[in-house]
Image 1: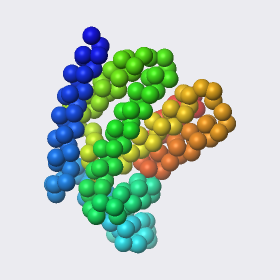
Image 2: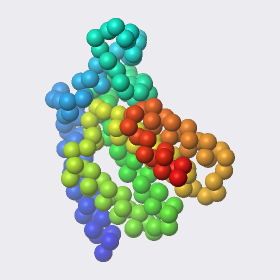
Image 3: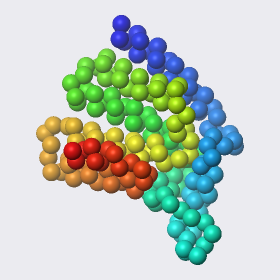
Length: 188
């Protein structure tokens, strides 16, 4: 029964993801923040400093890594807005798969872990206006942090895996500044 419920929810998710994928290449704003992120990412691609002088009229309060990730993707795609949206979509898939893998590491069977991941995806895609498919670093930061959590959950814990986890958590915070809850929870 759980498999059928998960499959039904997965179909609902795929329909929403399809809609996001169709909208992603269009030149319509999906969020008020997208233009701001695209502007700074295009500046990085043009070789301009990400953080202008304090006397300038433009302020950047985000950490730098997301701009460089999206700039690299933008160089491949040819459009920083589309690149940011694709990075967000791929990050959401990584985050969802990581949640499923984390559930497996915590003792869930395949059906239970798939159900947990699909339930998460449905909640995010259907019931929120979260940043999935939006040119914003929020989902990218969560995806990176979720990979760090997998390293913490994996047995045996070694110094190397804990160091890699700490490094990924630092990268997630330098991708989006408000993602401090996951590193704090991992420490606890």
